[in-house]
Length: 471
Image 1: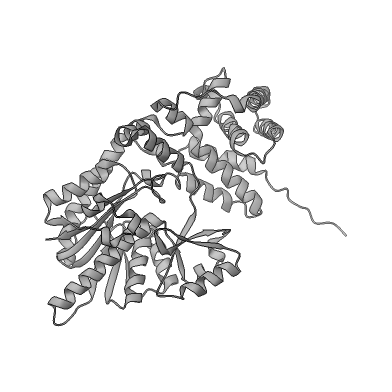
Image 2 (image 1 turned 90 degrees about the horizontal axis):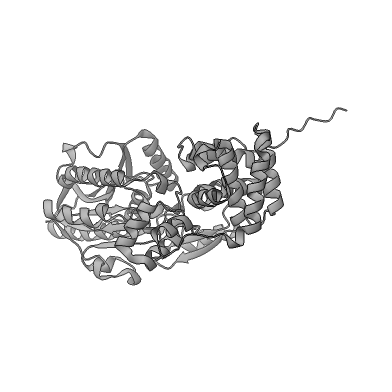
């Protein structure tokens, strides 16, 4: 009997190399390139998938530090190296410094094999020599002074212009704290959907599937999950009992729910025939806030319709998929450009959620290539875009209605500057949001209507949230 031919499983390092070249040489988005790479190799087991993911994400995240170290030990400038060799060295140095489970000898040997396999036999001595030198001296590598912008930039792999801006805004100690937090792995956080199954039953379901569940200190309905391999495989996810949403985004949703409840009290007092509330989420994808608000309205028996809009069908399709999974009949999804005025919504909205396009600097811990793509010019363009959208959507809000403006960044031009700009140019007043927040977050700035969350300072990503009421 002839034995079946077994196909060799590709070495994850080779796949990682291809993905890194896509990201670092061809400017592909890291999460999309990694997703494609994993999808192309369903034969990988859990350990191989984890190794590949860690190697790619870590090398991208620490790229500036890797390049600095390679530059110290190489006589050939990084820019003059072949892309294959440059990225073999990057991932090799990353393994030596940050993947303790991989023996140094294996890192060097596998890197040499990879260079040879890719047609660079003549450079295998260069690769081997550099990596063995780094392996020998890795505990005594000399870095620039960490009290300087250059030193912080290298040590924490953050572009120096960003370090300079943070130093100016937050000072040395807080900047270092934030930089450390950006490089710290962020946990999976979900929101327990209150209109579905009760919390105890959902926790039991997760525990039975060997998932560790801890409540987040900012909200009992925000759960930190550990031990999750595939989210789709969880009963609680499949049945719409939980929805992934970081705590900072949940806090914005929390403000929106309080605004909805306050608006409902107003309506009941002034209207004989109480019409359903209209809530609009103008830049909604991936839809976490819309889902949260619609779920809360359903659980609280508040008659409200939530319209969740975004620019492309790909984005709205993602929201619609989650809407169906959560059985939220009070949520509608629509593809629409927030820059285009919609006369049908003139003075119609009781609450608008405007988590607008931004530089994303608050979520760099989750999207590790944002920092390399952002520039001061793009930041300013995004701040201007936010004002353009705000100049359109403010007209949708009824007098007495609420605008929840937020971003996932820590750039003042996109945050405080625009918060004040809204009040200076349109009929809105800031709302004291302290009663709507966890006690630990009831700051002086929250009394004035805004809260800046900072990675490392707060137990969250970097996020900016505000509440304004139309006069």
